[in-house]
Image (cartoon, rainbow, N blue to C red):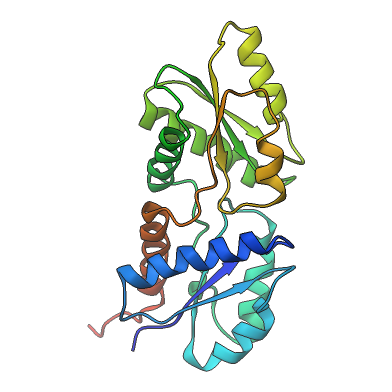
Length: 234
């Protein structure tokens, strides 16, 4: 039997965020109906990571972080949760981003928002004090620039600079009247509302249940599952 896919979302006080996470996992289940998929949250929503992993430990689940960068949660919290139930680090998949499938989803969300192909783009991530996570956002901006075939400036909604407001203002000052903001966020909530307050003409919605994100969740699961497999006898 394939290990359970335990998707770990950040969590939010906004019920729309949890609803968005569950909508994404419905797409995952549609794509892989034979796979058992469960959901938990790091904070502010239920079920919690600690409760979920304790209940599923006997099934040796694979944790797939629904997180867009490799920050503190991926480097510390999730490995500690695995260790607490005696599971090896191989049962933890990488963060979702950066990845070309996310560039596909981001490009689609910009199109849905009405952003034209000539608009300058700011990629607005949640932000982090972790330099690895900041670098991940910068790399994601490069992948999106390749997808769109035009420059994309990374920005951060907290803890790092430039902020989306600063990045949009800088593009305006540089002579770009048409600026689109790509929300590099999985779910609606506080950061999505903050992203919508810039002077950008177009602001895309969170990635949410985009099919490319669902495919990426399964790809991360498959990568981790392959890593957990014992080598065959010689």
